[in-house]
Image (tube, rainbow, N blue to C red):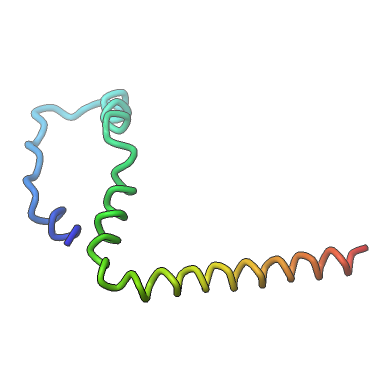
Length: 81
């Protein structure tokens, strides 16, 4: 699983000096900004046998929520007019 990959990986070596604010900012900018997306996709691919159940359920949930919120907005717009 993706979590197991994260937990069993090698830890980076400890720095010999403490970086200043500029060093911390540079380190943050050097990291991959797509790392959270990569973790999500790895976890989602681990659930591949469940895709026939999960994907339709998520689509139904999103569609149901969209229709409910849209009707609520239209109702409040009609009342304010």
